[in-house]
Image (cartoon, chains in turn green, red):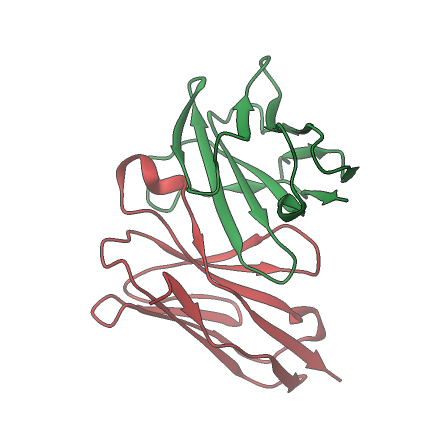
Length: 116
Length: 113
């Protein structure tokens, strides 16, 4: 089965530093997403992205967050000035389409971000 | 009311047992429903979609009651490998929101020998 690839698997940073989390979605997919999961809590939607622009974002996705598709293969999540509460597992996902109700999202294995 | 609410669990069952999980959702406009499983510190993986008529995949049976906004998952003949957290997931209310999944807190299942 095709895979969504995320790097790095673990990222440790100091509070206030910028981090970039990287994802390579499945090659023929057009829709991209970031989700996060704080330890012991539920998985939460952050943002969806299509055609080089944000389609939808949650309340969590404030001005400190940004997403980009810098080339034809990568999809990145940037946190400009990390806070302690940004510590979480961040999952990238992609889907071929989004207009079908049961469209399957493929999740990457996640990047564990630890802010010290 | 939480958007997606699940049995708190945890469930500890012996191999071979039948176990059922329940879930309710608050948005009556939700279009699609899923059960995912998540192993410790791993990504969520789709277990099965849930259809109005109910559906079965091997030992797993999912049911949906739109009127009650209730979803269930039944696992028969539990295996050790079924030990995981089971996530009830609801999709967006149509249009561009189909990729916006809302996850429940999850129910931990441990199957012991």
